[in-house]
Length: 574
Ligand code: UDP
Image (cartoon, rainbow, N blue to C red; front, side, top):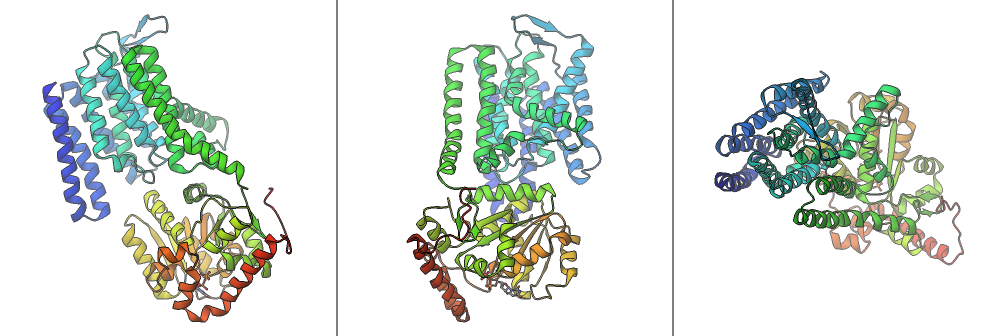
């Protein structure tokens, strides 16, 4: 015990220092690989120095599962998931086994050796796959693991049973999750096949420790069952759906429901985690009945659940008060936050359902839509229309139909590139002058080294030339940024939608010029004051003619407010 209490904190400090040291000297992808290796190495060393033979066995099996995960990453179509059952079988033959289960009446049902092996193999074999499934929602697997290991540790400490192996494993689990938290709890980065499999075996293996020693204690086994109840149920429904329907609803139903109700990705992850924690708490309480444990866990869960639910309730309230699609004349915008827009766009990029157009509109774009029918139609067909531009946000607020926040096209492009890098979704850059698009591609790659740039091309070509759309489709891109200015870019995307295939296409105006450094973006204070147009005018004085429209826009907003110029088409009630 003393060894464990000395070694685990020492390993944590060492890992922390090593990460800090290497953070500065390594490139980002190199650093990420290094951290994953360091995590596995820390577990192995901890087990070798302070763990018993059982802990060493579990960690060894987890390391083996992580190797399979690596192969799965390299050759994703080779049916690796069944190999985890082989890991489960090895585990069941040579390691701790599920020897019995507790029945509701307090009795225990002891398994025959064969049933014991099958139950253990299934239990250990399923968890890596379950965690990989959860990992499809970035941050989800890490958060649930943190709750699992906290609960396992608390249950071990308060059970009143002598469970040194379970204590060691859950302490290490919690400590290593903590020191590598930015890797596991990152809301926009997945753990990957290898780490998910590694942690899957660890959590399943640790939970088996309570039922393998012949002592009548099965709480540890039941905890993950309660905790992972929702994902297990969703995964089962998904697999049942695969059997019965050619178009199953897919896993992560709850998550998708929350997102479609307007919750952003981080809040949805926290919400589901807290629901799962409640499931775990119910099991722990029913099993342990220990008052101190109950108090601790129930208060922590209530606090956590409250914190997680608050943004949900606030968002629902805001959504109830604000129109979902406020309109200004013939243009409707989506009243969404940056996080929500990113979550929706990410889902659309993965869904493979034709071209989803994301338009970013400002005051000038709204004016353009009044004059240009083709552009107005393109906006109407948009999957998302984001309120870019302080002038438009001001006008919507002034007219009594505010949006929750401004989502600037360039910020959206940068955040979406970050998501694309984490998700390995290839992007294509189309538009602007040759130096600008090339510079933008280089800057994005520099900023997000994991980003896959499927291709780029300047925006000066004949709009009737179908080969451009063909080249974009053939590049395999899932996200296309088009920077050819309003309304050219939206009309081009709409007209070429059938040639482009399945992808998200985002109109980003002059973003490449700014990202490549050809133009400067207005400083924050100018943006807040709504003077971005002036900053741009100072850099490109030839724009003065277009900016006259801004003046007309403001006049029309005032007229509308006075009821002198009513909305031509009001869809705010939709
Ligand atoms: N652009 C282009 N093809 C064209 C005309 C313009 O790619 O035929 C590019 C231009 O180089 C600039 C971008 O479109 O980088 C945005 O232009 P603008 O500033 O007019 O668009 P806005 O930001 O006003 O939508």
